[in-house]
Structures are given as structure tokens and as C-alpha cells.
Image 1 (cartoon, rainbow, N blue to C red):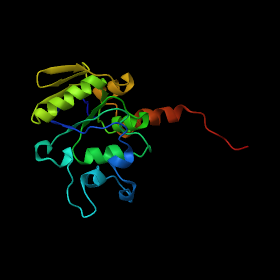
Image 2 (cartoon, rainbow, N blue to C red):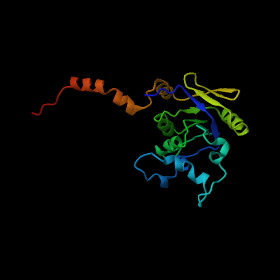
Image 3 (cartoon, rainbow, N blue to C red):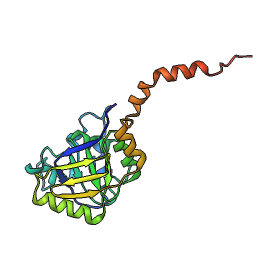
Image 4 (cartoon, one colour):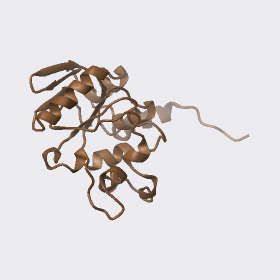
Length: 199
């Protein structure tokens, strides 16, 4: 299990309130048995026109290619609770999302991928987006231990549910890996349980 102590890299500003999961991954692209390849369709309808030609969108701009942190605004990931939305972001290389607030289920789904969903104020998100638009190459770091985000010469204290933060820094965010790691203890407990004997 991987501990998520820090996320470092570059960030892309995607402005807007109430960006829902259907905008993040349109429903028609969810005809899949696994989550592989969903990154290809992330934000598809706002990134491409009906002919598949690129629209004006930050995720299409050369200066933001390779960004692994996304910065948005209020109520990010609202709408349907589909797991496909954070998987689509993960598929394009996003490893953390910063916003003013998140839909609760979306934030939980992000955490299940080891992808922090952290909260800054309205003013702080706006200031950070301004900085990233002026300097797309600005280095950004999320310190999960200290709950601090650094971008350029700016420092912000972020918030997130403490249970999520602790799961990330301790490496216990991956519930499947946690279950597999505990198979021995599960087997021992199973042996202790009373057995049902048919009458």
C-alpha cells in the first residue's frame, strides 16, 4: 500500500462552479467493463466539437500538458455518483484535485484512488488559478502531512475530511490492498467464530 505524503508537479486551472460528473466523463463513454482508457474521454464535450476538433479549453493547451493537479471551484464532481469521473481524471494523469468544495461521493471516490481532493477558499482558488494562468510552469506541491499547498511563492492551508487525509498518509486508502494485506488475520478470526451445526 502506497503512502501519499506529497503530490508535486504542475497544475491546470479549470474554472467553473458545479462541474458535474457528466461533464467530467459523458455517460455515452461509460460502456466499459473496466476503467481503462477513460482518460481519453475526460471533459470530452467541452474539449472537442462534434467533428472531434479541439475547442478552447485549458486541458487542450500545450502549456498545461503533463499537469497532474487540477484546480477548480465550487461543488466539483456534483451530479451522478459515478466512479468513472475520478477514474477519467486519473487516466489523464491527474493525481490531486483542488477546489472550493466537492460533492461528497466524488471526494470519497477520489480518495479510493489515492487522489487527494483538497479544499481552499473561494479567494484562494481564484488566486491560485490566476497564478497558474500567468505562470503555467509554476511548481505546485501538496504536503498531505502538513495540509499545506505551495505554488510559486504562495502557501495555502487546505482542508479535507481528516479520515481521508489519514488514510492517504498512512497508505490505507486502498481498501482492496488493505483487505488482501489482512487475509491472515481474517483467516484467524474465521477460525474463532462459532460454527453452525444443522439440527
